[in-house]
Image (cartoon, rainbow, N blue to C red; front, side, top):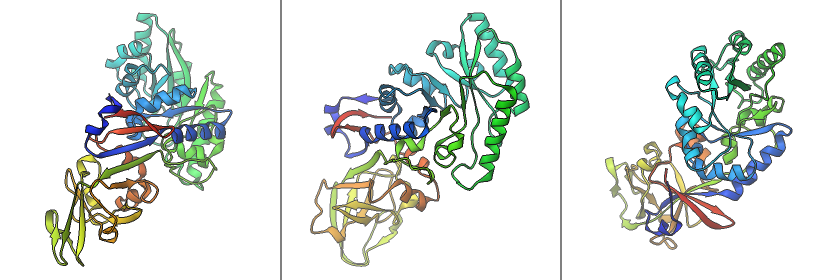
Length: 379
């Protein structure tokens, strides 16, 4: 839900700030690096928590070739927001969703014969052409035709189904020295060459593939996390910066004596006389509870540790080291230049994808362009 910028002052003082200028710069750097391949920007899961509608609009203005979502409903949200860029539904669609395909002009991924048969009959009945991308499983073991099955799918005669693309997905491309990725790519290229495929797009490279395996760029690449400046790997020099900062403000300050405890379970005991700040950001907003007493965040230019157990709506910080500077409504940066998504991910034994995807619906995404707030969005 996009809201009026003037309403922002009435919101709870916790927000994700997204820099559209950096986002555009990241996209243009990727586009330049992969030429002559074109770009299908993956904006699934609400653009990995960054807000798909606003970012898709930016990409459309920059001339993006294709957008990619996981589900039909994600794609429909883009259409309802007025975004006309071609959208590939990468996790496919169900037979019951076929009417939506025509209504919203979507491009489904196809990976089984049952759906392909139903689609052929449906398009024949309505005499409407539909573009599809056939998915080939070269070793991910998740979705896709086996290469011999895909060959059968290509040889079938269709009246209104047009195979626009064929693609595969890498299982381990974030490891630059990984031979399995090269094996997958070779399987895919062997299939494409053997069948002499008359398709517009062959694509294999996700974000890690773009960076670590430039030979996988082919006709189209599918950047996801790298668009948002959170590289899953290191390798090819593509300038990129995180576009998201996660911020809140201090709403209470209290002094506690050495030995006192705070929070649920009394998990923090003051080792000295301390100053504790309360911030309206909790696990319902995406601040994972097992970051309690572990994560350090930026206050007054210094890193201060979360103190005590993170609550559903609130957390506390030990701000003793900045006691002479800190004040009510002081800005706290939970994700930024000092504390990054990778810092969260390492503490949680996960990946940055999960961190941004878990930022809660109560946290507005505030978009900044040319140094000014230009949009505010609630998931």
